[in-house]
Length: 383
Ligand SMILES: [Fe+2]
Ligand SMILES: [Fe+2]
Image 1 (cartoon, rainbow, N blue to C red):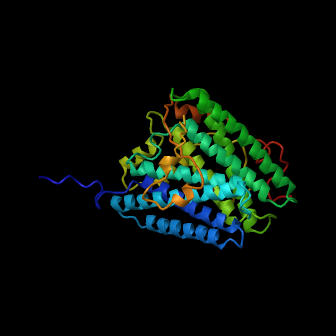
Image 2 (tube, rainbow, N blue to C red):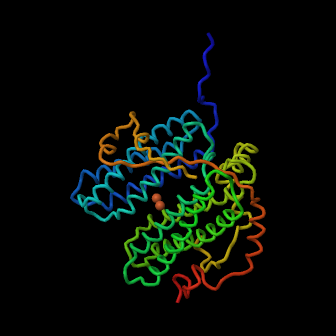
Image 3 (cartoon, rainbow, N blue to C red):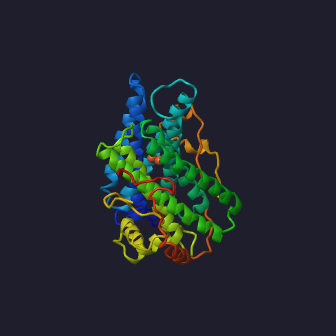
């Protein structure tokens, strides 16, 4: 009797998009463990050591990801990542539950714990999709994806404003304005999520994505400027440089996702264009594809960078039961907190990305006077 072929052989090449996404999220999650550990009470050694353990495990997985040679190694890595991330997710939710019941002190905002738990949940969904052999983000709902990222961006603005020294009046004001701006976009995004469902895209949603992109580019630049100020010891506050860099990279990632959504003309796969490039040239990495995308005309630029050096329906299902994997040692966490996981669904867009770009190019000529918003009187770090 003939043997059935192995699912993953050593000769199978690794999908660069999946590998890059995996590396991105492993690094993000490893940093979460660092931030959480630093915010835990100094006398709670058990929880601090637990956070350090997650940091070590996630960094070890990231190191392995950087050495992956073939699909078999990659899928083994993804399997192990799922186990660790599930545990980490429940750890975050457990800490949040303790804080909300006043059983844990320290300096981790509850919203921060919820925020990083949402990111872990997202990464978990991504890893499970990769394990199932699906193309990265192949079946997502664009409104739901946008809502997920908008909520993160809104949270980031709030964290920045609350970690700045109270004396940093102007920067706090700017961060609050970003928070309000993204709260409004989030509400609009949720309305689109509700209105569109799975019935396909509409021009108004494509225009909304352009608005989101413009706001996110400005927020990304603000984060980069804040990071540079921290690096030069010119900012008063308690934001670690790594945290500033972390939230900037997440904004960059959202912009990348928006770029791909805008260029998705003809298929359900959000990353179809990326996948086409990879098919055309097997050595082209996702980053190369994205660099190429960045070289295309920006969808809309309504700000003028001040510093050259500084950069630039979800069917939500409560499936806590599903998130607990018998193979993972997470019973302790899962028994103490009921979390949730999300599943994404795709909808189609009938609006040409080229049309969006043409509209954007036409609006490039008009540049407002100020960098971050219409009210702020001067660029960061200048007199
Ligand atoms: Fe994060
Ligand atoms: Fe975040």
